[in-house]
Amino acid sequence: MKGLNPKIIMLFISLFLLDLIRPFGYSLAVEFVFLGVIFVSLNEDLLPALLISVILGLLCDSFNSGTKPLNLVEFPLICLLNHHLFSYFGLVNKKIRVLIVKNSLLLLALIVHIIINSIHSGLILPLFWIKFIMQSILIYSLINYSLGKDRDVCPLRVAQ
Image (tube, rainbow, N blue to C red; front, side, top):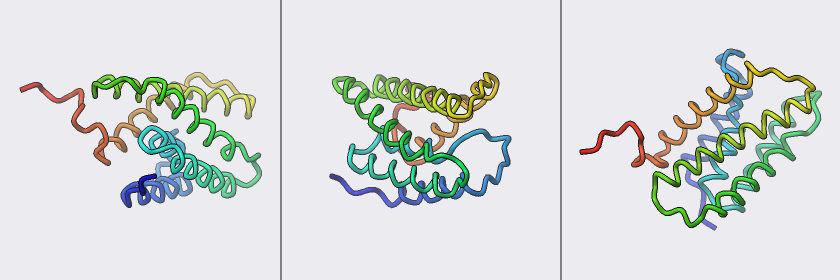
């Protein structure tokens, strides 16, 4: 089991604080901690990713009073789903294909998260779903790029 990078630990602390404080109000419909769980499940080993997802799920549920403990169950399940599906595509060796698989798993995790929370709340809001998915993919890409993961596979880079 490899140790976690201090950058990743600082990332989780800042993502948790961003979710807790919500400095952008509700115009930014992103759940930062959930994106952190997706990031760690796609880039780290199973055991540390599972432990982090359980801890973050517990923290999110404990600070959201009056709600049922949904994150404590959902975050580890998303982590296990991502690891299982990513290991299924483990023979993919080209970096651009790995990037496509990771982005597909990101989209799948976001859709599963939307479905679970829609069933839990009893609301179906298609415009919110589109806003949530678009903003989440953008923020995830910024997190991924800022931590140096998949930096050499940037689709905007011009071939020389």
